Length: 114
Length: 112
Image (cartoon, rainbow over the protein chains, first blue to last red):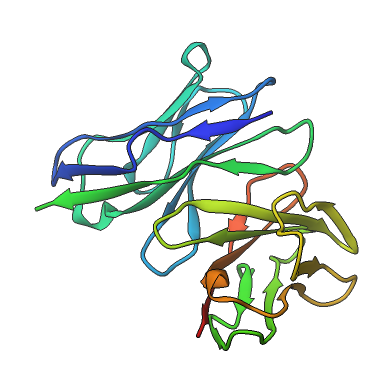
């Protein structure tokens, strides 16, 4: 079985500060991992994904995430927060061997303080 | 290549009516997923379909909800005899086999 835990349903950072959104997963096999962003009243947009290869993955809008197998984590970071980063962020995991079922975390709402 | 299309974007229904939500996947995508997002909650998986087949409906309520993805045309999520608790945003996503999911803009259902 697979699952995702996002620690912190609400995160606030100052503009220009580091953004760190946490995601831990459980999976019996090497997973595929994803981060999505949702702006108000919109659908989800893919930020970045890890499938195989390099464990540090760079995405859009300056975000990146590192797959750490030993810690079963896939935390999302951005060096300097911008006001436009305020949104809901979802981590997701899938098992490439058993199909396309995605398991989403409950989301983290990011607030950027000017 | 157009993205995932959902219509209507907003739907208002009175209690007891039927709601039909449509999803057209991206061109070339054979897998469709439906999710429900309640206010202040995350995404809840409902159902995963391929053309003419339901692969996983473990997230679907046992009654009143059904989904289909016919050989031709969009995927349909159907809610019969809607109740106030059905008010939510319903998102559709599509993907090619074994790849990431692309989401539509959602349908916001309001039951009055």
